[in-house]
Amino acid sequence: MTKNRRVTINVNNDLDMYFRKLASSKLLFTNGWYSKAIEEAMMLWIENEEK
Image (cartoon, rainbow, N blue to C red; front, top):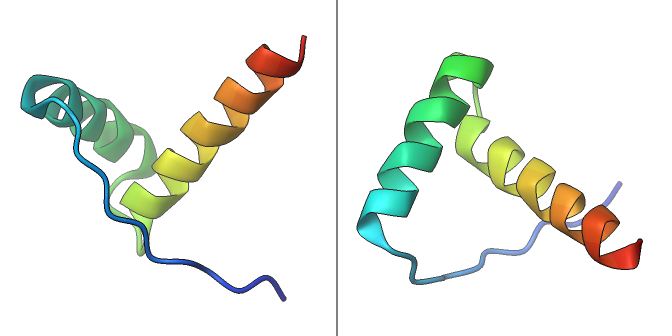
């Protein structure tokens, strides 16, 4: 089992609100929805950068 790490970041408020709106509609506010959305976004960014 992978250990999770708490991370504090600063992002543009409008970008965060738009991301939360899209992520919550996809993940339906399930337990840990925001963390799951951030992890998915990070994985997509990594995949894109490795190309």
